[in-house]
Structures are given as C-alpha cells and as structure tokens.
Length: 90
Image 1 (cartoon, rainbow, N blue to C red):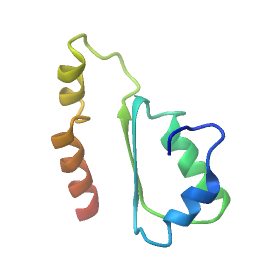
Image 2 (image 1 turned 90 degrees about the horizontal axis):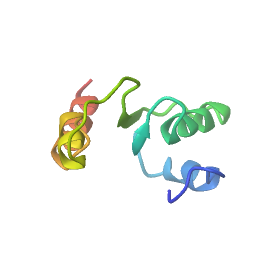
Image 3 (image 1 turned 180 degrees about the vertical axis):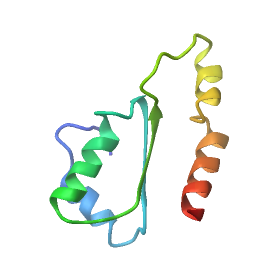
C-alpha cells in the first residue's frame, strides 16, 4: 500500500486469496500505525490471518544515524528477514 488513509481495504482483502500471512513495515510507531489499521480491517471483516507488524517500538530510541537505528531495531533488510522467518516458525 502506498498510503494508510484511506486504507485500501479492497486491496488488502484481495491479498488474502494468495497469502497465508501478512507483514507490515513502517518507519513509524507500530502502536496506532499502519499495521494497526491493517489488523482492525481484518478483524472488521472477520479474517483471522497471521500478521507481523514491524516498526518502531513505543519507547525512547537512542540517537544514531538512520542506518544504525534501523539495524539496532531489526528494521534493516537482514533484521526484517530474520523477524519474518522467526514469525513463520512459531
């Protein structure tokens, strides 16, 4: 999705035909963010699909370069791949 509001519910629901799980990624707080909107949509339509939300935690993040911060939070490419693989194994 290119934008959060208004949420493209038709696109989101159409993805469920070909996907067993969804992953949301955002450079913003997870709580109240795009991933939350996805979960709300799925619950509103009674679609219990596994969703992994990746984004910023709800606590103060120490300073550093954008690359350093993303790597520390697991939001760089390697970190996201690791998180997705771990989530799939649960």
